[in-house]
Length: 95
Image (cartoon, rainbow, N blue to C red; front, top):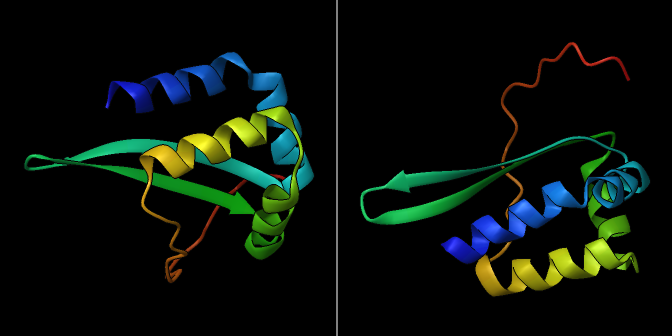
């Protein structure tokens, strides 16, 4: 789990690169949390974007170094990517 913490520490330290990537993807909010359930830890990820399918397509095709790093970490530490059914999405973010 320490490797996952280092991954996100690195993203925080490379914030200008992360913001460039999020801008390209049309992402407004990206948040990550560790959730402990008994002996298991889960990475909970939240994205808010203009168009989530577009955001994933831009990310998947990206050649930015930060995105290559992210993809490698995701492959090493995560089991997949599941888009959940949205039941409610209210915000006051000025777009």
